[in-house]
Amino acid sequence: MGQLSFYSAEAAPPALGDLAGLLCARGRVIGFGRGTAARVSVELADRWRAGALATVCAELGVLARLGWSERGLPELGSPFRADLTGLAAAWSHGGTKRVPAGFTLDGRALRMWALAAGRWEGPAYLLGLDPAAPETHDPLLRVLTAAGLTATVIAAGDGEPALRITGRRRLARLAELVGPVPSGAAPAEWPVRLGA
Image (tube, rainbow, N blue to C red):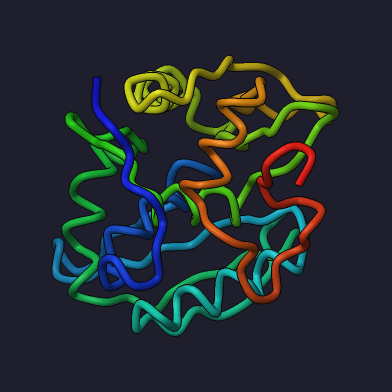
């Protein structure tokens, strides 16, 4: 069984691979110019997520801009960059989003996923999935399960697909992995130890 590494601002420097956490949610990566550049964007349910994610992206050296999706929701996107082509190649196949073979989450990518699409629903923490890419749901479930964060694929109360994490130990592990509430995040939506 694999182990996720803990989030720690001091442990490892932020890396562009952390953006994979956005792709676990409603993120998209689009290549341009025969693979010479790519951009990442993510549709978000709440505007606070855009501000918090823009701060994290800036730590990665990616200046992301806020726009609006076709559905009228906040959408954060990067410019086209040559250094995002590896992410585009790994996460897309024939224009379809896919979870790369051998993909593993670390605390930083999981933190990005929680910022993009994490929320509480009752006593469970949900990590939102991409409804337009149902073929990614089971592989992402396996990635979490292999790392010791057992979850269930569900349709959340709002009808959106999500991975549902329950249980005091699993929720405590999730809270340790994603670290403290990031600047600009809604504390009520962040994973914390129950009773904390």
